Length: 253
Ligand SMILES: [Zn+2]
Image 1 (tube, rainbow, N blue to C red):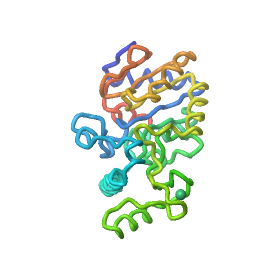
Image 2: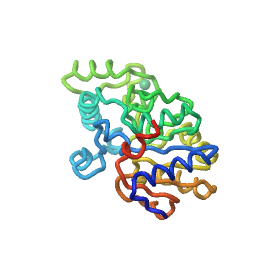
Image 3: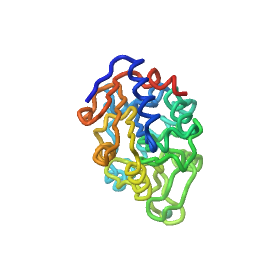
Image 4: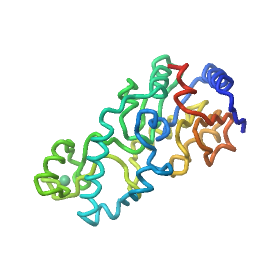
């Protein structure tokens, strides 16, 4: 592992790697969006240290848990609806546009990659999408406005699917919920074809997130980890940059 503390040297090295790569892939996590005002829920003082996440099993079993999940979701959407892509998002969108980056695999559900202009075919959303809801039984799609209206029409109560009575959930992946098959396959294919794999703002503690950089490395790709804090996989990386993501990526935008 080469830990690069000097910003300019780190940027030069990253530019060099990008120039040499044929299929560079970025893997992004919550740390990319903190500059946009979206907190990293896992960080100390983050929402998840105050509100324990609701496991999928509990969500399915209890309406009270579903109601609490929707209450949190609406509160977060209200707080972060004005979030704009940060310098990191803009840099990645530019690299995609210029053909220097083949694709982005993201753990984020904030929609900021899309907002910065990354086309859907270059983006894999591993943890789903928070901009709509689905019935977990019949897979009917529901808009958040509809859920919001139903929620309040019954004195803050999670609505059931009108078609089949099943539980309605935002189209994101919760703790304990299985990963979406199609997205996992696309992410695996992207990882397999990469010769440069750049982790950005992910602490790589959640499985299967950590498996992607490991597989890329096993396939012979160069591995770069850009994160404010140390990660589990720093020892595997060719280049580790511990700095503010926006500062490092700004010149690439
Ligand atoms: Zn249904």
